[in-house]
Image 1 (cartoon, rainbow over the protein chains, first blue to last red):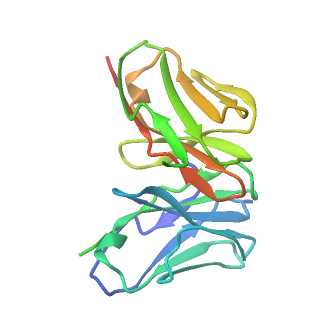
Image 2: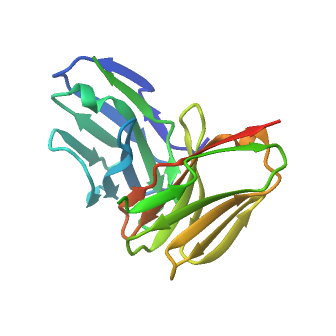
Image 3: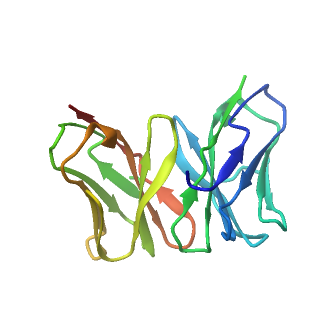
Length: 112
Length: 107
């Protein structure tokens, strides 16, 4: 158990819908990272937050947004969902940038 | 050409064998990560290294910054080592991932 929690574990929704994925970092960690793992593209970095502020951005679509709240939990919002958004979404946390990351169990999103 | 290349893509071994997985990268990095992804999907960070060598139990990771190459070794492999091993490199906090090496260890 990494200490990072993600909810929900599974999510099935229809095209065009909007969903919110939630992540709670390990106690004491200030950085949260979001990753997408799809069958055709592998693991990709989406976005990083540090203590509430966006720190780094990767291949995150404009239809996706994220935020980190004062209690340090983070949410990833995915809107106007397409079939290609079906993937495993992982959250990871670390004490700060450049430190070892601890991964959550992931949320499996299926868009039908 | 991918910025992070792993080899082999698939690997089968008999229990007890010594295993090596290689990772080459073409970008400047501040650190390299080795991750393990189990069949259930969960990801565990095995190592984060920026130079030299690290050891944890039966796992050893090495990195050669000049040659832009890293290796993950598993000594005395066991069926529970069966997983996908993923190399990831980062300059800032943006990690770039390899496509993974699928390892199966048979008893």
